[in-house]
Length: 113
Length: 113
Image (tube, rainbow over all chains, first blue to last red; front, top):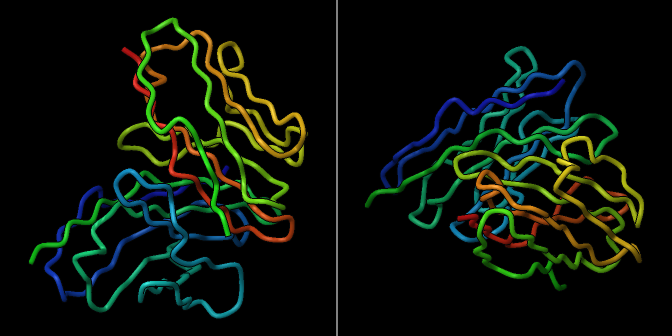
């Protein structure tokens, strides 16, 4: 069975600093991987996804993520964080050929001036 | 393009009462999902529809939860009777026939007292 682990419950960064949010997955085959962002009181918005090909994927709002098969990881990065990036970030995995998503527990990002 | 619509936005009920949530997916999206997001956790799939048929309801507590999508468009999720542990945000999502990108509504926040 697939599972997703986000080891950091809460991260605080200064505005303008770089960001890396960790995600590890467990799945027998090559999974489909996603990062979603959720602002307070809002639904989830897709930042980026990985299905196959280039292991470094670019997303919206300046985010990128790198798929590392050897480490079963799909970490999210941003070189310079903006105050508006404060939100909850969820990593998710889907089985090959399926649409259903399994989500991690999320990482809450706080941005300080 | 209109997004996934959900109502009501908030609902407060007492335990043992019944409640219903409504979802209108994006036009043309054949697949519809209901997710439950308990505070501090990632969303968990309750049920997945393909048109008006159920694809996956393995995580739906069928003794108290029910869902339908009679005409393959709108969907209703019902809880009867509600328990304290049902307090959560109920998210509806839809996806187009050819893609794995899920579009989420803003959710219904349920508080069971």
